[in-house]
Amino acid sequence: MPQPAAARRHERAQRILDAAAALILRWGYNKTTIDDIARQAGVAKGTIYLHWNTREELFGALMLREKAALAADLRARTAADPAGATLPGLLKHSVLALMARPLLKAVLLRDIDIVGKLAQGQHSTAAYAERLLAFQTYLEFLRQHGLVRADQSLAEQVYVVSAIFMGYFTVATLMPPEFRLPDDRLAELLAETTRRALEPGSDADPAAREAAAQAFAQYLDRSIAANHEQLRQAIA
Amino acid sequence: MPQPAAARRHERAQRILDAAAALILRWGYNKTTIDDIARQAGVAKGTIYLHWNTREELFGALMLREKAALAADLRARTAADPAGATLPGLLKHSVLALMARPLLKAVLLRDIDIVGKLAQGQHSTAAYAERLLAFQTYLEFLRQHGLVRADQSLAEQVYVVSAIFMGYFTVATLMPPEFRLPDDRLAELLAETTRRALEPGSDADPAAREAAAQAFAQYLDRSIAANHEQLRQAIA
DNA sequence: AAATGACTAAATAGTCTTATTTGGTCATTT
DNA sequence: AAATGACCAAATAAGACTATTTAGTCATTT
Image (cartoon, rainbow over all chains, first blue to last red; front, top):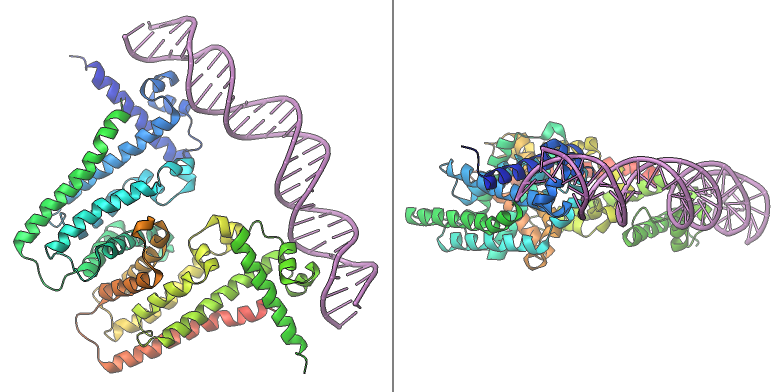
């Protein structure tokens, strides 16, 4: 039974995106041509334009796919960790998932050699603010249920978490070699720092923990859903 | 009584360096010419070469002066704060002192528009490692006196402090405007995060605190002294 | 109907020449 | 003796022209 046409078409789109990703990491965005990608994907150049109208759209689809894969990876990692559905677990697995995706890592670190002009469309303040707002909603839930301290403003705590995460993430490449740590250990320290930074004075009850795990799942689901329709349209 | 020749010469060097600093911040390093600096400082172009042999030496002296001024500022800030001579105090006042020095801030943030090619000489891994080693010595003292937890390796704690500091410092410019905090509050949160991250299980005795304040002063003095002779030779 | 790859306008890179600027020098001025 | 600023070789920028490459198109092939 041969594969339906739509499935073959979708598989080819994925293959083209795979090729694009590999070549960006190898040569950088600016040096990667449509011809290179077509050759690597084993299709004709014109075939690429059957999926996307412009070079820019192709790379836009690639970034969306990367973000969706990151979210799915994060979902899987937190689900596989008994302590995953917590704020420290979220940050720990976020940094590990991100480090496992060199393209997104390069974007976040503004690695000009790799992402070049691609970076310009990927650092929208509005999108970042949106993500922070979504996170803020989850954090507010945790505050209300006594799972994090509430003696700082909500906005301040968004700041604290962002600073800690960004610090651990970026310092990983800035440290002299003799001071570097394995990713796993870095992620654990990140989680520990976050936990201690936001630790409430007293323990929360188990019902609050259960509710928080639900809120966590909702937060993740919402961020996955936010990309899903966009991605569906970007890969045809 | 006219000023001695050496004092006048030194004052002129400072004036030239002031001019250079102002112009870098305005136009960026790459666009700032020796002619511009001479004009701004109110001296002839050739006069500049009475102080430094090359453009590069002039800017090298400027960076040394900046670092020395930062250290002095830090010294003054921590001395004026009752809780200054502590690790959290060190970090709090470091970030505030650094933010008050736009040129060093631009270097640390790798702000290409401002520092351009100047950055290449200012990100030596060896120098960074040296600074981390000096800090590590101070941190080791704190561990031995029960002022910070000792259930993580010393190297890991150097990492933790670096990550937290770097995170608070860099996220300050990345945050969308509606999520930003005033510098003072940022510095307080940085200090708090550090304190909690490295908090030992039990309180240290007052003798340990007093000894740590001495160690703190030594750490600062050593880093000031490390630059002093270099600076003396760079500004003649 | 779908995939292909030759074609082409536009973009980019390379080369050469000319124009301008700049770092550093040093004869002149103070 | 010290400060100055005109001078100049080298560096950089600008412009014109040529060569090459690339994104996108579409007639041809499958």
